[in-house]
Image 1 (cartoon, rainbow, N blue to C red):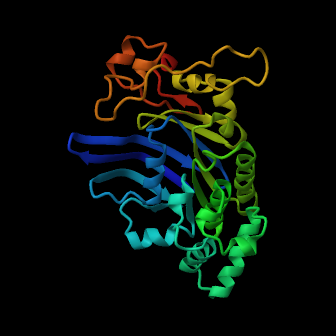
Image 2 (tube, rainbow, N blue to C red):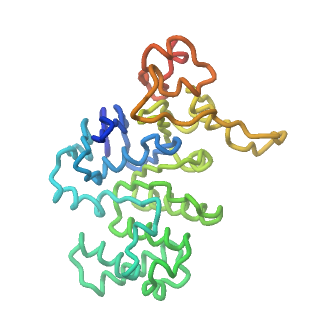
Image 3 (cartoon, rainbow, N blue to C red):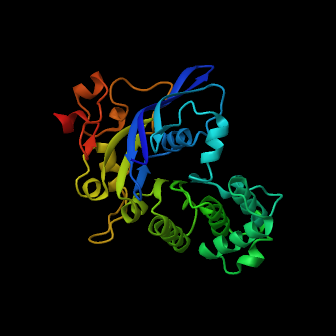
Length: 318
């Protein structure tokens, strides 16, 4: 197993008390597998993977549980050892390329710096590799693009530059944090093709964080649905889309416009908003928004069941 996460808990000390952003998340990832992680904003998708990357440096954060990468425990690993892994074996595509890229350096310089931080090669060799990478991510004129600053590129080109940086050392594990957000459909399709190419070329495993169930249906092998810091359903793509078990998963799928059949007058929406992590409701966190909420849902928290396809729902487990 490439990545094994067990009972991951991430909490933050605040003036109002302890906020548990991640509460007992567990999952496995095999070589060459693509895991889609879906859920609304605030569900814990990004925080859980930032913990895997060792990028939660807030002194008020408390990280518990186990994160094993190729049998090596990452929780508690010294920062220097984590830096050696990040960028070389584990890489991340951040959601906002404008904040991921430094505005005062050219993209060629930034990608070359990433390469030279992990490989012992000359500056000229690194720049040659940068040109190759930009060509791989479909920059029209890679040599010219190397001398451009982030603000001189379109949103799609900036995202491709961030992807080129993430792929520069051929990582075995790639974490993609909503890399297609705010991009037009044709650019999205190109980025999804790049992710598939990475897996086909290097047998890399990918964790793809997204709001878009359509993207998940095209890309993922397995899917993990998160809500209020917990995993509420997991399963293969086929199982989850053909037989969604958790009411939250069904609601997410129901909000997708149908491709065939009669066009609905109005798309279904999930009522209410995700709960505050400081004041979670009693019982199931999704209970106040759930159309099938009943007494056991208000009495205790449902636990994710065993098996390849499982849901944390009392009605499913009844």
